Image (cartoon, rainbow, N blue to C red; front, side):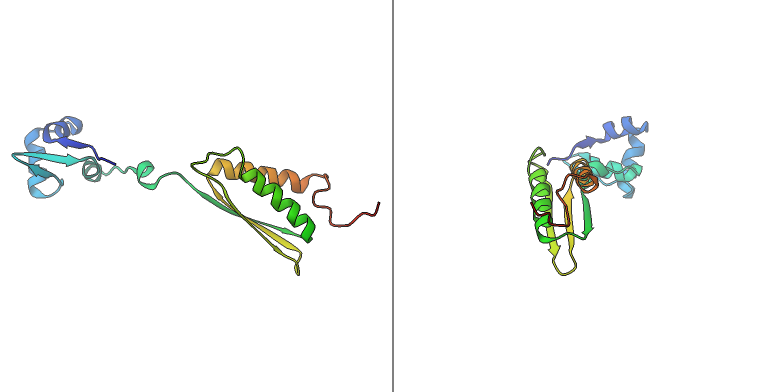
Length: 149
C-alpha cells in the first residue's frame, strides 16, 4: 500500500499556514519530512501525527467479534443436530473474504455444549439470532427426552 506524500506548499495550504512556518516545523523536528533533492515531502501519517489525527479505520482494519454460547442440558444427539445447523449457517450466505469461524464442543458428562463464533459483527449477530430462535422455539430440535413411537 502506497502512502500519500505532500509538498511543503500542500501542507501549508491544508493547515492554513505560511510555507516558511511549515519549513520551520520541519527543521525543528516537530514535523517529520523526507528531503528529496531540494524539496521536502511529508507523509500523510506524519502530517496526521503532527495535527493529532489518527487513521484508525485503515490502520486497524475491520472489526471482529468473538462469542461463546453455552447451552446446558444437551445430549449428544441434540448437540450434533445443533452443531450441524450452526455450521451450515456459518458456511452459507456470508462474504467469502470474511468467513465466520465456528467451533462446537460437547461435554457428554455435564450435558453441556459450547459454540465459539468468530467473525464480523453483522454475520455473528445473524448467527446468534438464529441460535436464539432455535433455542427458544418449540421445534423439537433440542428435545431432551426420547419419545417412543
